Picture 1 (cartoon, rainbow, N blue to C red):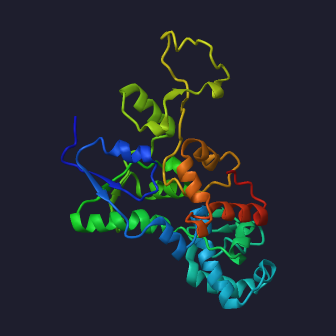
Picture 2 (cartoon, helix red, strand yellow):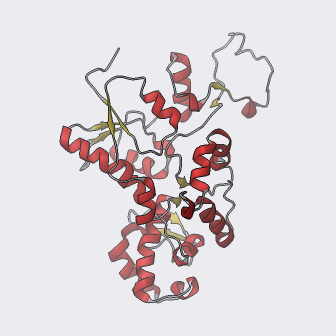
Picture 3 (cartoon, rainbow, N blue to C red):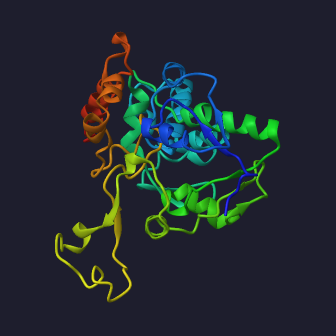
Length: 309
C-alpha cells in the first residue's frame, strides 16, 4: 500500500548524517526544504546547543536578569532577594523562572509539575560563551512552518512520547492527534517504544539508512553472546530485545544536547565514523571550524562535566 498522495518533507539543514541525505534521495515525492541561514550563522548569532533545550532557555532568561540586577557571580545572583527575583523572573521567563534559583534542590514548573533544580549549570550564564536552543527553531521549525502556511498541509511525524519528558507531556495532554494546537500535528507513533519500532522494521523488512547498521538481538542485554537460543530454532516467538549496530539516533549531527550524560559517545563515534565532520566541528572558529573542542573543554573544566570527544 502506498501513500503517493502524501508528500514526504525533508529539511536539508546541513546537519544530517550524509547517509540520511543519500537515503532520502532514493524516494520519490519528497519535498526538500532549506533553512534561511546556516548552522554556523546560528552559532554566531545565538550561541551553542549544549546540555538541554530547557537549560539553554533558562540561561537566556537568566542572563537577562543577571544584566538587570548587576550580579557579578553565581553566589551574588543566588543571594538576591528571592521573592522579588521570582516575580521579575516569572514575568519574563515563565516556567523556567525557578530552574537556577531554587534553594531546596527542586522547583515547580508552570504546570505544577516538580522539576529538578539546575543550579549546577548556572556557571554557564557567567562565562564568555553563549548557549541556545534557537538552532532548532531556525534550522527546522521555521522552514516547516513556512511550508505548512504556503501549502496548507499539516504534519505527520514519527516522534514517540518515550523520547523526552517534553514529548511525553505533550502526548498526555493532546494525544496522538494534536489538532487543537495552533500548529496541528499528528504523531501516530507516540505510544510506540523503540523496541516496537525495531521489531516492526525487522519483521516487515522495512529499509533503513545505512548509518543505523543492522538490527540484531541485544545479546549484551541477555548475556548470552554467541549462544544459540530456542528463539533461533523457531520453537517459540522471538521476544528478545533488539538493538542497532550503528547509530542509535540520527538527529542533528552537531547537536550537543545530552552529550554530558555518562553513557553518551556521540562525538567519540563521530571521530571514527565521520572524521571529516568531526574535524570541522572541533576545529577553532579562527580556522574555519565551529570551535566545539574549546567549548567542551570549558564546560568540562568549569562545570565538572565529563563530555567525551
